[in-house]
Length: 285
Image (cartoon, rainbow, N blue to C red; front, top):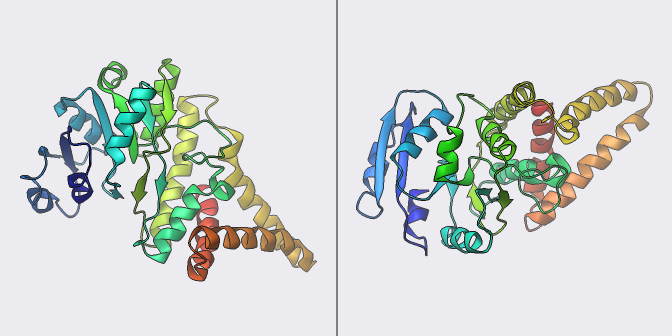
């Protein structure tokens, strides 16, 4: 991430890194970039991602706060696209989509597919086609500083804190927008066990969010649970008639073909994408 920030074509920015109880401290890595970026490094006790971002926001000086996860890599024009987009659409908060870099491993590309495909998430994470409105997420998010301060920043939720914040932004009447050109490379989990744990937490957070914001749970959020229930019924039914497996086979083939062609006809990524997609749907549901 820091290396990609050094390559930005738009150069008027500061960087604030907040260390929040990481197992491997980033101090040495941050030190390598101290002379190349306007960079500030803070260490706080393990208080959760929302509180860490709030701490960083209090140190920031800019009109806009741009929030990134440490596992993203930025194209060189990321900041330039944001600057240009804000000139055309001066919104209060915004976000961008994510992609897989060509250098990512097959499993990372497969997980990226599972998290971004319309066939698995309904396009709610910034896809061109979507079944619900776009909510900026903390892996690639921006907000006016005064709006951030007015709303009190992120809550103390361990999971789903970014969606909670986006809901509060919209409920307060502020303008939000997806900037399609402000995409990032998102280097997600490296194995399916970690990925399952991540999406399970996301599913649990969605229930907590609906308790906090009644009505925020939409049909698209219930689809993974419906999928899990349907798969169980189809598998049970297959003991009596093999034809019950046909819908599952058709869906798996759709995932395989779509993922393969989105990844330069890579058969391995296509197969792994089917597994990752089922993992995502079962974990969330």
